[in-house]
Amino acid sequence: MDPSLNVLGERLQSCSTAPLTGFYRNGCCDTGREDQGSHTVCVIVTAEFLALSKYLGNDLSTPRPEYRFEGLKPGDRWCLCAGRFLQAAQEFAAPQVVLEATHARALEIVPRELLLAHAVGREGGSGQ
Image 1 (cartoon, helix red, strand yellow):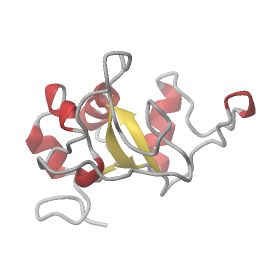
Image 2 (image 1 turned 180 degrees about the vertical axis):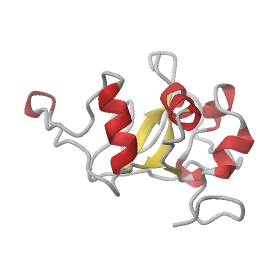
Image 3 (image 1 turned 30 degrees about the vertical axis):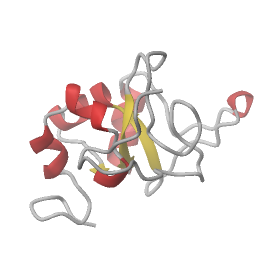
Image 4 (image 1 turned 135 degrees about the horizontal axis):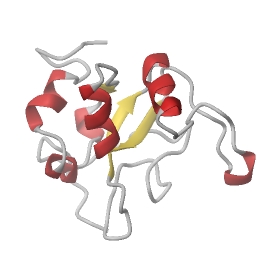
């Protein structure tokens, strides 16, 4: 697993334990070599984003009990693949970002300015 630092250069905070998220299902957007999707961006999902994700072939709202996944609903926090966040931003459907819980490796895919523009509770961000 890569060092657990967020995009602010601080210790990575938990994204969510209910629903339990993260590539390693530890509640954090930790990443490592095994995480080919870079599940590094902690987001607060919206209905608009969930609809886009479903349209793009990744239905995150339907429960999948076989994977112990209850399905996401608007307002849930989730460790999102950095590439999918970038794609959602390009489609004007990006959810809000929790910078303190977003892994620094997200910056390899998503420009810092884009994360800041969608940050919760940050000046210039979308607010809460």
